[in-house]
Image 1 (spheres, rainbow over the protein chains, first blue to last red):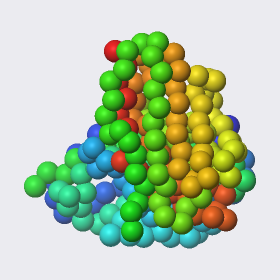
Image 2 (cartoon, rainbow over the protein chains, first blue to last red):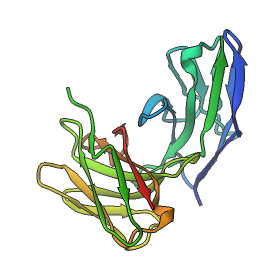
Image 3 (spheres, rainbow over the protein chains, first blue to last red):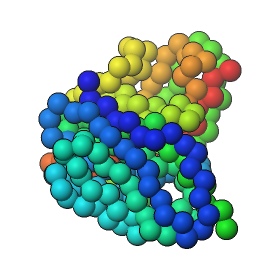
Length: 112
Length: 114
């Protein structure tokens, strides 16, 4: 079935370090791909998205490129801040499927 | 512009009881989806409501049921609660014509079953 696999956390970085969170997917069709972020005690917020192969989603310094050949959508940021500490979820949506499938989440801690 | 509103924010119930959770979608949205997020896990799709009917359902037992009202608000009902039903329940709404894409999430209802 359709699924999303992302790297296990927690990921602990110092402020201004480079971030990569790996995400790969399995899908029967051509999904749209997303990264969501969840801060403590809150719901999920859409961080960025890409709807077709080679698209790059970007927001707040975060980027991810839809790689169809490797079925991947890795999240990157060049310089993390303490305020980026949160749980990050990779997700996919298949048109006509009506639901979004989420990965298990990766917790990020950024130290000052 | 109000986003997605869920109530209550926290709830404690006893095994075997029934619970109703409520969701008001973002203004202009007509589709409501419900997710269960167990501690340390990603959200799992329960079902989606559109035009007052259940359009799609995930792998959840019939103890989980829902309803959508003419104003697009929605309820999630869980009967015969089990300890394993303890989780954060998230509601997400979507705008018309997106087939459930373009979620705006609420902050969730934290359900604890004791």
